[in-house]
Length: 298
Image 1 (cartoon, rainbow, N blue to C red):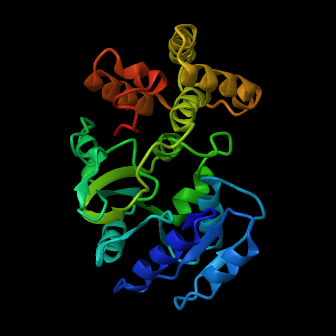
Image 2: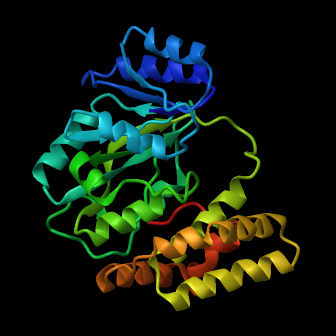
Image 3: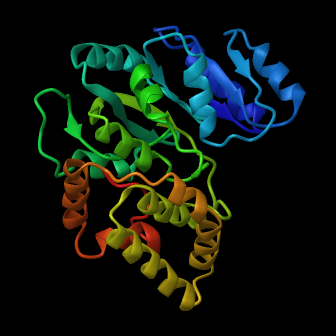
């Protein structure tokens, strides 16, 4: 679990995890700077292992947790999400039965009323061809707080990319797992609960669009990356403040993106293009332009 400056929510999540019949060992990465919060987390009756990197690692806190885990599979939670009883046992059984499965995306139920996350339907309708060696539906996206990874697969590809920090960082990890030959699947028989705080999250739209562009620069063909760049630039010229902020922040990271650029294998790029065709002509730039449908696709 990763958390930052939300002790009440984090302690509530620890309560829920402690109630699971699987009794999983819990590693918490406290991205905040208040020692009192870390001590409160350590004092929880479930005795979690609390890691304090001393700075906000964002999604990279998950990489730190995986490095300290001692189990073959790692289920991720944020401080506002937890797992349904029996879900972790089911996930472990699926990973045991499918040795090529690197990451299992779970069904996510939102809020006290248990609403279906819209992403569930997108993942369930993935147009990627079935794979006999994988359960559920092959996908190239997932929700970071509702997935279970094979620890060796996560470590082998380097986990979440440091350039993205946070915001739609899952897509690049899915690409890298697929490029390395690992399967990424959605299986609705594994369920997570997500209770995010309501309301707007300032700067979120810009983060998502920045990271979509960086992902294109890091892994996609040059003409695709240029098309994404042109789309974001056009939105910025039209006065879209979030697009302008995303482009500005992406350009600051451009030298690092160039150094870390690594083209995906043709088979993975073909899958991405299949997903984009399913979304229509606008699908290739939707994540960059923002607006409806900017959540990570399958």
